[in-house]
Length: 114
Length: 114
Image 1 (cartoon, rainbow over the protein chains, first blue to last red):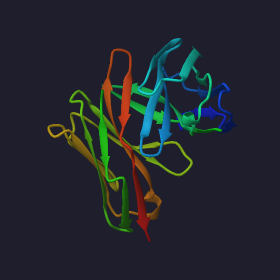
Image 2 (spheres, each protein chain N blue to C red):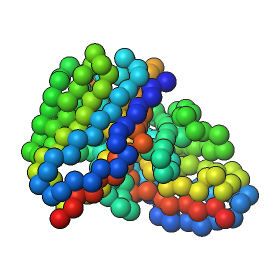
Image 3 (cartoon, one colour):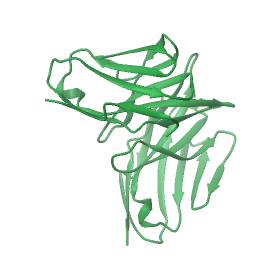
Image 4 (tube, rainbow over the protein chains, first blue to last red):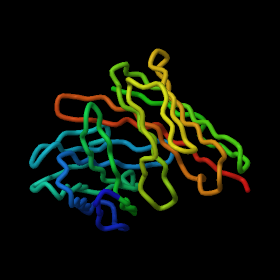
């Protein structure tokens, strides 16, 4: 699991409430990613980070924000959760070597928005 | 951006038979193609990858082939076993100025019948 933990692992919340998911890594990898997984869509990139305080949007970033104040932690925030954000969220880190990127995933957080 | 299509969406094979999953990609600049296996309730796990300067790669019972001209790549699992039952994802990577992004296929659910 490349030293990646996610918290919480499960969360049920109500529409309109703020939610923050945490990804923690122990190996000082520069790149970190947040994906969501939904049936029929595979994994879709929400946001990613290429260093402390350096973040950028992925393909499904609307309604999400991220922060990275230190190398080991990457936070995903839903400012006002909606039912369409019910999903399984995965954090990933990349190990850069040569010309390519290898990504390793955390165990996931299952979020239900009622 | 990159678009990855994966077929079939479900695959049922008899134990001992072979399984083949095919993916196509759209961005000719993509140069790295990993495959992930995801078991129920877990994060995706990298099982094999191939880079654009190689046409085929094998690791025990699994192999991946890449045809850059046709922009497609395939995963081959031989002598399938019950523990091969899982969801498999292909992905393609292209490099931007600050990032390495993966675009995923929608996944193939493989069931190995005993």
